[in-house]
Image 1 (cartoon, rainbow, N blue to C red):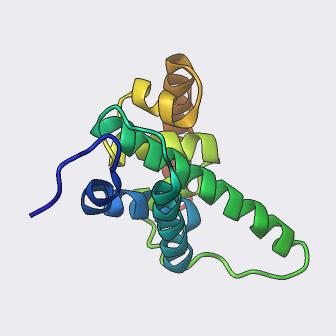
Image 2 (spheres, rainbow, N blue to C red):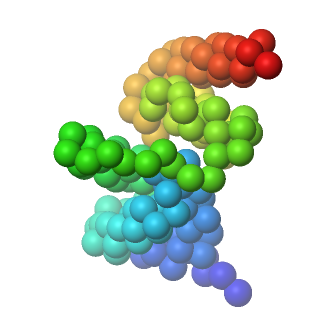
Length: 159
């Protein structure tokens, strides 16, 4: 039996209900299972140390996703430093799927598209998680879809 949400002690509830979501968002942004596992662990470590009360389950879930996105961004900053000194192989596991094409989008579009189409969030929820306005989230979704369409149609024209 899973625990019930408690505003002042959300860890057990979050771990039972949102570990898969945090991991999926991390995999989507790191492209590597090991890095995603590290990010997921770090997100839940931060939650253990967090003393703020959460209003409800959605507030908690949005916080977890926001922290995940930030940790992935920090991880990518470290990649840039390594990339200056080493040749790194391309991420493994690509199979030509739509998700692979989504992963190749610029970050601002990639996360908006992923959160909307794969996690089911509205533009208002995405704006809250990513920081910005609803119009910014809608614009990122529209531009992301346009870029994705160009990439997908362009790939078929080359064949």
